[in-house]
Length: 223
Image 1 (tube, helix red, strand yellow):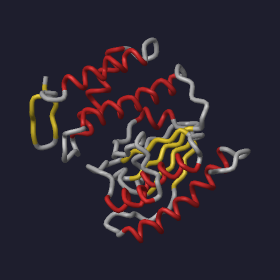
Image 2 (image 1 turned 60 degrees about the vertical axis):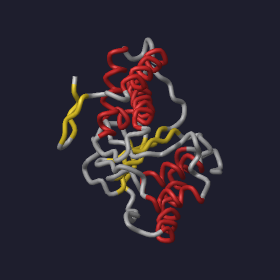
Image 3 (image 1 turned 90 degrees about the horizontal axis):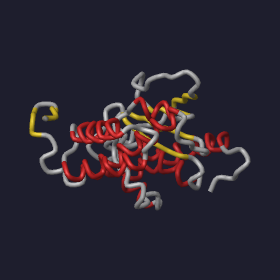
Image 4 (image 1 turned 90 degrees about the vertical axis):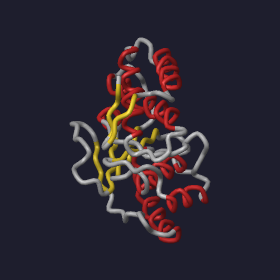
């Protein structure tokens, strides 16, 4: 079997096959009775292929693909109603999932104290988080080890699982599902800007996040 990538073709999973298949087996056990083993393996391989298209370094790609697949499987189970999530679900979407959506996801996670389940994605994901954005997230202490943010492609399963979908400059790329709440935030793009400029964008996003958080958790004071 081969997986095709833009501009090249190579044997699939030569180096990462053991990691991916082991992760698929682990996830099949975790989601047993909720998602079939064949679906789990397909999503793991699809997630690897999707991240591989934009990756510039392959070293940790199988691990990231496993994490991405787990997010998608959780979202799929939630959308099917077989996996309960009592927290509000918010999905942040921008073009590259390297700037605005990463800042918003980090801020929502921090300010909610984990009381909101947060995901982010990009309509055309970049290879990595913008360096200035990563620096601002780090200086605010928002880069928790368990988060390990990386750009991810936008998929239907994460949209279907969300209660609120927040878009920032991605146009009509996000699919529309009945019953979902959609917001579009007019926020500057941090691409190519320095850290000082990104801090200003972070503060703007934080204002939006606090407002949304007050609506989602009206009886709780943000951290």
